[in-house]
Image 1: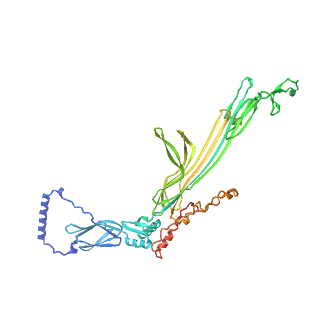
Image 2 (image 1 turned 90 degrees about the horizontal axis):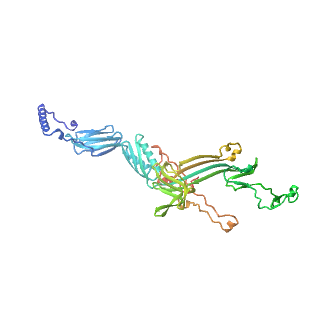
Image 3 (image 1 turned 45 degrees about the horizontal axis):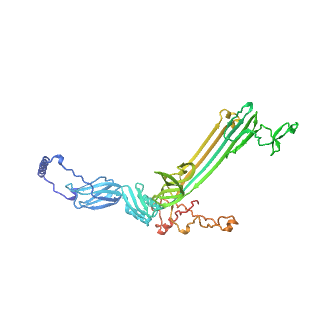
Length: 541
């Protein structure tokens, strides 16, 4: 370095010897006066930052001449010295390194942290040409390119990222932190679909016997109280002369006479009385077998049930905001507050929806959603202090998912199959073939339930009021003539409702240099974006 700056005369041997002797004496004096532990160490940090692009450089003019230069990694950046006061720093590949320039006495004249990245000015020009409406700032460091600013819609973020990535190549990572200038609005459609099937079969055998032979009464009973066996009561019938029926002289035999049938009744008959059965189908029989009075009742029932329900709420909100929806009601719950006082709180039931959408930079939607469908039921209801508190059947889910506009996701589902069989029987007798049915009850139940919860988000924009069709549009109440003569309760029906459509997908953008036409005008760009889904009441195409 000294040879580049000035030529100096060669010193003599005597001068060199004198200089060395003087330096040695000064060093010995300094060491004897100052201990080693008290000597200070100076550490210098870079006091400036220099950013250059790969293949580009910057010329730096220094305030005083320099003697030496130091660079930590000359594979990232290098320095060319044109004069003692001018340096040329140029980038070679992405990264960071440190640079120092010192004087002949070792004083740091200049130091810098050098960052080498992609060429930013060319990227700015490219983005201004491709997206004149966007406000995008580009910063580059190491092997990263950061995009910040505002855009008009999420599709522009994907397009900008694709263009920059194609420009810098695969060796540099592009990170997008672009935000939409106006918040996107999200309409969420939720579908609760449930189908329940049930099958129940019951066969209940009931038996009652009576044996009065041998001077005592014996009987067997099983099942519910379906009837009774008693002696036939003839006390209400008059006794008339029945001698002629047997060919005997008059006055020989007197028997009870039934005026309603016009016939004599033989005393000592058996009366079978059956009680009215329950909702079950009942087959009844009575008679005398082997001298024993027998009454039977066979309850047979089969019930097949099918229930289907579909709830489809939808709700619109701005990206990042929480929206709630409830279609149902509230039922009171008494709560004791002490000292004999009772307060009332209300609990919601019906169809409710709570969700928070977030539109991401790539146009996809992250949704925190909590749908619920509940209904009041008497099964499980309790009575507390004279108040009847109903139970609530609830179907609820809460989760976070990510999907695109118009895409559907089944966030929850249930398939339940239950089987129950119970036999109530008399030991031993119930095992007898055929007749054993009268000594047992057999119940069989099977239930199947299928439940699905599906969500579908849409990116939507407001529409003109003339494009909104309400359910009440076209509805007219029937007049007296239509109600009584034509048996109508209305004079018209609602018209078809508007239906949203899925916005077309956005490609990743053309390859660099493949465009033969200039960037589209502002009016053309707005026309392309107007195809977003429109809000409405129905989503079926």
